[in-house]
Image (cartoon, rainbow, N blue to C red):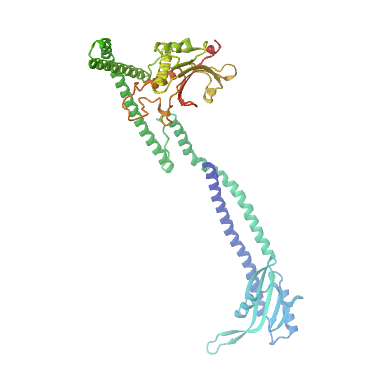
Length: 506
């Protein structure tokens, strides 16, 4: 299959040129060939007729007379020599040694009997062209009362056979000339074909570059509109579409900004009264033991819901800071294993039957302790809530070759170094549980905000923002986080944060 618009355009142009050259050559060849053959044919037929009609015969002719007439006609061949044959009844004579010719066809004999003015036929015998002519001898008798004459056959017919070799040579020369002329014509046609293809493809190239620019997010990309053809109309339509897309995206961005600002403002406004509510519910919770059972249950429910509301408000404010690009990374060089242990101890996740640790000491990394604490706490808490213990928390470093983008761009601040041999180093934190795992259709959305795997559930135990905040915190470290299912079941979350050269060699 031919691919590429340029190639197809050039081939189409050459095909049209070839068809034009071929058609012109064929018509020219046909006309020239007919002119050559008709000229020779008309000259020979006219000459042969004049010579036959010039004889004065006494009928019936004897053999010597017919033989002499045949030889006389043969000597007067025009435009070139021919062989003459005579047929009279059963008598067959010729100017040569053979009394009959295999070139003369029954069709020519039939036509000679029915045409007093004579007839002719072009015949190819053994690949050689011949012109055969038949000229019957006729009587001219006067018509009674009309003054005209009637031509009646005398039964004597002269045939002439002439080679058309010279004419065939000329025809073959014309074929060669047409072929030799067509090939250079096609070669010359290639130049305008390339120019035409380039001219036609220029708007297509502009459109391709504009589409790439649009794909990179430059919604203000436009194509210059020139002329009034179909391609100009296409460019105009592209510009109108990109303008409409730019307006829509601007409107969506403004709406998204308004929604984020609203969430941020609401969270901020709720924070102060919520702090008071937390203080009150804490006091009520402490005195709940002295209240009657129904009142105590109500107090504990209010306290629990207030705590959840406080978590939601804090998470909303945190995610708003990420959206506003106001989140800051305050890094410090820490022992990664010790940081994880402190996170687990502060939340009392130290039961070895529920938490299994694989934390080798001595791995130094430059992290924001508060944000890394949030990452580990969200992942472990999520595993304990939705999976089954024991939850394994593992830590390790990995060395890998740089990816294509890293190799092309080279190391940058906050990205993994490629010391000695162009490899990169990563801090890998893995949290795995023994639960049922994550359904395949949920995996692509686990880091979405407020995503619910079961739409029938109206509330979850968390705020619905924990994994989204985890994702943003990891990105802030220049790393990645991904979710999957382990080979033996259970969900596995893997956090990868780049290490710099100094951290690796520390």
